[in-house]
Amino acid sequence: MPEVTEELGSFEKIGVVTGESTHVEFYFAVEDGKMPQVWDYVVVPSNELIDGEEKRVLVLGQITSIIAYSPGLTEYVPYSVAEKLKEAEIIEPRNLAKVKILGFLHNGTVLMPRRTIYPGTYVYLAPDDILTEVYSYPEEEGLYIGNLITRPSVKVNLTIRGFRRHLAILAQTGAGKSYTAGVLLEELYKKGATVIVLDPHADYVFISKDPEGKKKVLKRVKVFRTSESTGRYTKEEIGHVKTFEIKFADLSLEEIFTIAGINEKWTNIMKAIEDALERLKSNENKDDSKNYTLNDLITALQTSDNNNALRALTYIKRLKKLKVFGDSTTPIGEFLQPQSIAVMDLSGLNDNVADYIAYRILSEAYNQRENGKYEYPIFILIEEAHRFIPKNQSTLSKRIVKKIAAEGRKFGVFLILVTQRPQKIDSDVLSQCNSQIIMRMTNPEDQNAVKKSAEQVSEDLLRDLPGLNVGEAIIVGEVTKMPVMVKIRKRMTKEGGADIDIVGLLKKAREKAKENIDKKVEQLKNEIKSFLEV
Ligand SMILES: Nc1ncnc2c1ncn2[C@@H]1O[C@H](COP(=O)(O)OP(=O)(O)OP(=O)(O)O)[C@@H](O)[C@H]1O
Image (cartoon, rainbow, N blue to C red):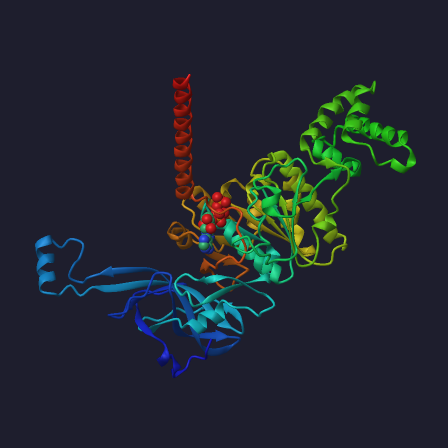
């Protein structure tokens, strides 16, 4: 921001501070003829003590409401008087604007003022170049997410450094969460990130293609599916799809216990399974000692004369429902490549299967970083996060997501959680997300859940949420220097989950219905004709 000198003369003056101010908000009387918009940005000069030195600074604020009134037309003016004032043209409408202070820039960081803005201070519309400076970062770390809602000419960047403390994208359905997450994926890819996407609705399976689905725009994208999964889109529609599978014999004993839901206190059951596996291993010739299948284990338990083996069977049989066991294990290395996006398409799978796959991929990816086997940071995008980390309910993936939320930043594993049900998600994990992209949200319970999870989310901000349009977001937290209201930019890649074209599809349905009737009529005519000919 420029030093505050007389050059403020080139700024557009729009009012004067009036009434009572504090260091967090002030009011100003809007100059006649000026029409600022709610959510637009203003600057006011002020004095601050910085490192023991008095400095003139420009404090940036955002207009949170504008009250229009007329000194003559008070609430209780009867109609007859109001009409006379109007006829005499002495209404004199006035605007009073309320401003929330956002802070001032000092050496690239934002500081909050300690002094109140004095009544009588001139208020200026914040020039574009000041706003651009506030919402930009060096090329290496800035992610271009969109433009200011009130100033489309100002680009808004987020800092990739803010992802160290995880991010949540929260909004009601249809507000534009997946679209926004897609924009983030494009930006993360440009920066060289390794991204794993858990995708229950196949919203990201086209992320490699341009919006028309014709050209490949992101080169290193892989889409995985289990062999039994039918998915939302066909393999031909997506292009290349890789099979994700796990060889049963590759599971450790602990993994078998965990996924079968065997409590660590049930030592007899655990022992029976361990013995059965030992028998399977020793039965096989040495070369294929790791070739036994889940069915082999079930048979081994069934044929055992040990009662505990029969008890174990109930739990082991549950694993059959997982339907991810195949001839080999997809190595985690397939998901972890520098500058790449790996999309695990979970569409069409039931909750338990999706949960197990999420648990397996996240645990392995986390281990790779924890043990220093993979050297680059990993970003994990979890769509429909409430399904994997529900409140008051335990799932396999919840344990590992909680671990990543608490310790991931130490090892360079970062979460991006996407959900339309903030109230249904584990509140510990949500509050570990130090940045939020919040879009339209009208449900008060969801608003409250968001408020509880993030200290930067104020009542003011919650009040604004229902007023956001599709594709507009409020972004708070470590990814931005100051809270910001953004119109998310256009995607350069194809969406998977775009809203269906109801009008177009219904038109096709009518045409199809007519075609069916015409066919039927034609058929009847032919039948009558052949009947008459007989
Ligand atoms: N920034 C944007 N620019 C243009 N169109 C957008 C934008 N954001 C969202 N849309 C459109 O709005 C519709 C809903 O978006 P999206 O599917 O991302 O919403 P969602 O919040 O993820 O919904 P759901 O919870 O149902 O998955 C889509 O058709 C999408 O194309």
